[in-house]
Length: 495
Image 1 (tube, rainbow, N blue to C red):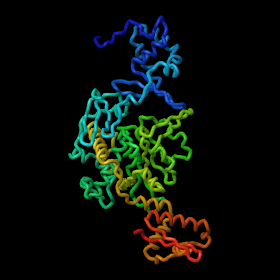
Image 2 (cartoon, helix red, strand yellow; image 1 turned 90 degrees about the vertical axis):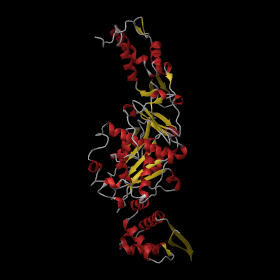
Image 3 (cartoon, rainbow, N blue to C red; image 1 turned 120 degrees about the vertical axis):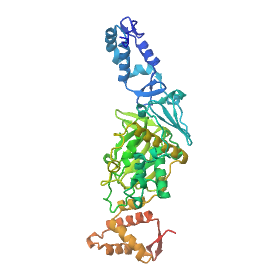
Image 4 (cartoon, one colour; image 1 turned 90 degrees about the horizontal axis):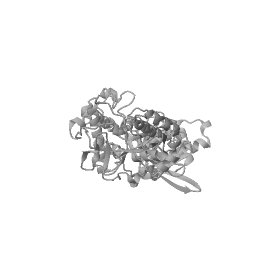
C-alpha cells in the first residue's frame, strides 16, 4: 500500500466553479515549460517542451495528454475531465496557444563553439576538443539544448583508439575496408587493416574526417561542402555500376547519433518543390541515396552553401539559415559531372573501395549485422570511434584525399567505350600534327568501322562533345590554328 499515489483533494487552479479557465490553463502550461515558436509568413508554428534543460519539439496531443495526466491526480477527475473535453479544441487552439505560451527562440540555446563538439546521451553528454574527449553530467550545461534522438541511448565506457579493443572493433575494420585499394586486398582482414601503406592511412583519415564533419554541430560557411561518396571501381562501360559497397550503411550508422533525413535518389524527379517535406532543424544530415548519373546535381548548389527553403505541404514554407541547415550527402555508383572548379569546390569527394559488393558483404566478413545485433559494449565502442572521428575533423578539417578513378569513371559514363579506346590509341600511335576536325572524325570512323549511314551531322557533333570531355578528363591541351580559312586542331599532353 505504500506505493499507492494519493490523489489530490484540491482542484487544479485552471478548474474554477466547475469550468476550465482558459487563462489559468495556459498559465499552467507556461509554468510547466511549454513554449512555441512563430515563424515568418507561411512558416509553421512549432510547439516545444523543456525538461531538465532539454527542449523537445512536441505535437498538440502531447499538451492534451499532459493536462489529462494532471487531471488524473484529483479525486473529482471525472468532473474535471468532462469540463476539459468540452473546451479542449477551443482552449488549446493554435491561436490561443500563441497568445498564452512563452515564445521559444533559438538564441537562448547553448551556443555552438567551433572548437568544441558535443554529443548527447540519456545519462551524460560528451564534450570533444582537439585534445580531449570528456564525459560530463547535464548539470554542467549552462544553457538549454535541443533534444536529440541519441538521448534515448546510454553511453558508459570510452575506449582508446590506440588499443586493440577499438582498433580491431568490427565497425572500425569496416571503415578501414571502405578505404583500401585493390592491391591491398587479402583474405586476412586482421592484417589488412594494419595499414600497409602511407596512402592507405591517408584515405582512412580522410574518411574519418568526413564522418566527423557530418556529426559536427557546426557548419562554418567557409567550409560548407556536400559530401559525395562514389565507387572507386573503374567502370568497364557506362552500365557497369554496381551498389552494395557500404556507402549507405556508413551514413545510416550515423543516424544512431544524429538525425538523418533520407531521400531515395532513384525516385528523384525534376519537380522538387516538396522534396524536404518533414525536414526539421533538428536534422543534421540530408542523405540523397543512390543518385542516378543523369540527375542535375546543380539543383542543390544553393542548399549546400546558402539558406535552404523548405516547402511543406499545405502552403507552409520554412527558411533554414545557412549555418543551421543540414549537411548534404550524396551516394552514387558513378560520379557527378561537376562542370567547373566552382562546382567542384562545393563537394568533398571520396571513392569507396569495391572490397564489398554482391559477392562479399559485411555480414560475410564479420558474421553478423551491424547495430541491430550489438550489445551495450559494442555500442560504447561505436560511439567512441565516432568521437575520435570528430576529433580528427577538429584537428585537420575536412580532408580531401587524392582521387583515383573519378575522372575516368565520369568519362566512361559520359562518352562511348569505343571512343575512349580510339583516343587512347590515337595519343600513343598517331603523329601529333594539326588536322581538321573532319580528318579526325574520319580516323575515328575508320577505327570503329562506322557505316556510312551513321556518319551524319548529329553523330559528328557527338564525337566533338566526346573529344572535349576526353581532353578535360585526361588533362590534355587542345591547340587550334587557322590555315587557309580552315580550323585545325592538335591534341597534346599537358606539360
